[in-house]
Each structure stands twice: as structure tokens, then as C-alpha cells.
Image (cartoon, rainbow, N blue to C red):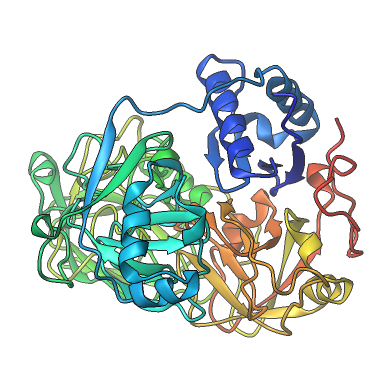
Length: 561
């Protein structure tokens, strides 16, 4: 693969972004690295291909000074003739070509609507990569004459089954979601269904053809797929085998079942998700004697109340909440970072936290809920996993208890964020800090940013002085590339978004920096009205400075080989 001129960019403290130049080179690099991982020659967590890049995350990526030379050797030894893996079977997708943007695409390309349809259906497509949403595949190989830009104003809702164009790619929306692609048709072909052994209809390397066949497509443009997310805890067949422990009285504004997350599913366009506060989850499970990644309840905004339907042992970690246990024997305080007993008929009531946002409530045995792709976590962006808790739900305990109830945990030294106060987070600049001018970089690290109420588990939305792009980048679109946990993506309005546990797998806006791994738990505890100040870290081989690094694609000086 000597024809691939790869360069390497830091992506936080646990990732490396390989800039390959174009889609074909990126897919070849992905093929070589995936084979190396499968053969045991490369020990990393996820390998995420995209339009021009390959993101390598976890494992050896935590030591880029050692990994980058190894990646270079693997790529150079991968044989220039290395073939991109393809599926043995072809997927044919029937399409009713009557999308709302068909006329606009025809005008942009100088064709008639019928010519657009004929050219779109005549091509054989390859699944280049997945991302944006579970089951969303970016299909390459289409007619170059059909390359059109995304809509200038994205739609707030695009229905499941919409067939669209964006740049050189075609795609099918697997579920209703916002989006900016040009919609030229619709299909009933299910792109994502968790009831199937392989939920994603399309995987990287597969081939696709579109067939114009109105009779195979529902006449309802607003058709939505059957529900594919599991029912709430305690309501499914799996819960029937557990021990009912708690009945929800007040679920608060967002209480979710979360565990350590999903692994090895990026090939289907699915992120890891899982708890936003993994250290708090680990402490809570140790306190009640569970395995470290067992499912628990992650509480966010508002109060919370449950009643015990069977005697159990609980633990609270993360953001501290004033709590009470009430029952026939009176009222006592609910401790924090200490296991406690909740007897049948007693009620646990928790106030909103005074500092921080997220609290973990662990149940001895772990929370039992149906698993999706190996995890019981709720992914709020993808719509996977158990539904948010509601009043009347019964939380059942599973069999994840592996040890005796633990001793109280030592105090956590970090003071959690509070409204009106400023928190400092360390960041590793890049991978796309070169898209911003010196003034923007100085603003990014020199001013504080307000956490807005629009923040959630997908990301913390910030407000401050808009960050301006460098000359030459202001009118450019960034081809989609992999996103790491803690990435600070900057959309055209210049207001950064700090990605958390339910982030998209890929994104199309430049990432100016990534929050240091050790500060991610603090980032997940940011509350609306609090403020952040970013300070550069010199980890991942980057100089600790707010000055513009002065490089574009050649970052080998920053990640030495």
C-alpha cells in the first residue's frame, strides 16, 4: 500500500485519526488494519472508517508514540493490491422515486427528474462506512453527475426509509431523524431491526442496487417501522426471571438503565453508549457486590423516588443528593458512597443534586432488562435499549452479584460543577484545530464557555464567543469522520458541542480538541448555567500551547514516528 500517503492526527488521549486522502485509500487502510486486529497483530478497541479517514480508538491508541510507527508499517506492508472486502451477496432496495427534493436535484444537475432516477438506479454501490445512526450506510460508487450538496437548511424530521443524496454518497435513513440530505425517494426495506440476528441490513464492504418499483413500497410517505427497542425494565420476558426489587414512584426528568456499554458494534453504525459516569458506576457496583459493569439506574435532572417490593441493598454514587428512607420504623437519611438496606415497603426519596448532574443508583444483583447488542444501556440518540423509567415501572434485580456487600468508598476528591461556577477541563488539541485561526484558538482556551439547557447525553452544548475558521476553511465542508468520546465539534455557528456517551459514531464538522480521558467524568456532570474553561494538555504528543500549530495534513511532527 505504498501508494497511500497517510498522515496521523491525535484524537484525544485514546485515539489516532489516520488521514488517508480519499475514500478508496481510507477503505484500503481500514481493510488492512481490521485484518491486523483480527490476526492479533494490532490491539485496539474500534476501527472506524469514514470518507477520507480511519479512526483507531482504545488499546494501543493510548500510546500514539508507539502506535503510529506500527500503523505506518502495517499500512506500507498491506500490499498495494489489497482488495476492499465485499459481501458475497448483493442487496437490492426497491425505491419509489418521489422524494420532495427530486426536482431540486434535477435542477442542480441539469437533468430531468426521470434522468436522475435512471442514473441513480443504474449504479452499483459499495457500503463505504456506517455512522450517523444505527444502520445508516454511506454508499459510494454512484454516478458522479449526481453529486449534490446537502440542503442549506436541514429538515427537523426525515422519515424512516427516505432515500437521499449528499455529496458523492447515497443513503437510506433507518429511522426518523433530523437531516440535511437531498431526499429523492423512499423505501420499505428495513435498514435496521433489532429482531434480526444481524440488525443492520448493510455492512461496510457490501454491495447495493436500487430498483424503481412503486408496487413494493408503502403508499404512506409517513410510514414508520415497527418498534424495535426493548420494553421498559420489568416489563419484558427477561425481567420475569429476575427478582422484582423496586417500584418507581417518581422517575424524575430522565432516569435510564445504563451499564458499561456496547463493544465491537461500530461496523453497524452503533456507538458504545453506556453510562456517562463510568467511575461512579464502578464504585456503586463494588459497594453492592456486583461485577463492575453491571447495569444500574443513572439519574439526571430532578428528584427520584422508589418503593421496595422486596428487601434489597442499594448504593448511591456520583452527584450527591439529599435522600430519605421512610417506612414503618420511621425516617432515616440515605447515605452516599455507602451501601444501605431498603426493606420491603420502605420508600427511598431523593432530591435533585446540589452539585453535578448524574447519580448512579446500584441494586444488588444489577438491574435486569432486555439486552440489545450485548448491553442493557439506553442510547438516547440511537433509540436502543430500555425505555426511560416511568412511574409504576418495576425494577428487577439480576444475577450480577459476585461478591459480598462492599465497604464504604473513600471520598471522591473532585468537586462537581455547580450553576454559576467555573470548571476547568484539560483538552488535547486536534484533530482539526488547523481549521481555526489563531484568534479562535486563543478564544477557545482563553475564555470561559456557558453550558446551555439544550445539553443532554449526546452532548454538552456551549455558548460563548463564536469560533471562526481559518482562511481557506470558511466555505469548506468536512467529509464525515469518526468521533471520539469528549470530542469538541464546532458547527458553522461557532458554538462548540462537547460529545458525551450517546454521541454519533461519525460527524461532519471539525473537532477543535478532545477532552482528556481523566476529565470526561467531570464533563458528564456539567449542569446548565455552569461554565467551562479549557486548558491544553501536552499528552498525545502535542505541545501544551494555545498557539496555532501551523500545520494542515502533515502532523507527523506532532505524533513522531
